[in-house]
Image 1: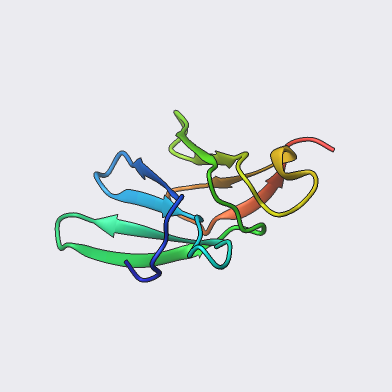
Image 2: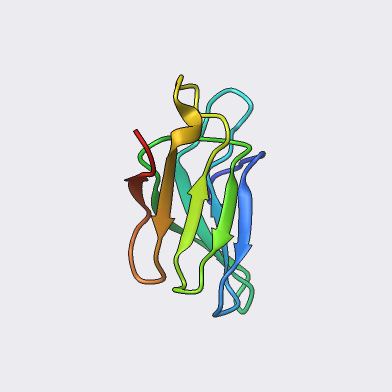
Length: 98
């Protein structure tokens, strides 16, 4: 891993790679994400979420995007934010609800 983390999520992508997102170092919440490639046993940074979070969910959608939502963010309205990550772009923030 490029960034040591716990309480993160890991999602198997259609191409066999694994997206690891957010989590914490016990001291701070993380907003970084990385992709693990099992074919060469390597990790590559894959962008960042607008809001750091841990203990969240990550769901692979039929479109190939990954929905990241919920968890703990240290913000009062933590459960109302999510992020979508596509196969070809960085992770971006998407507000689910106001």
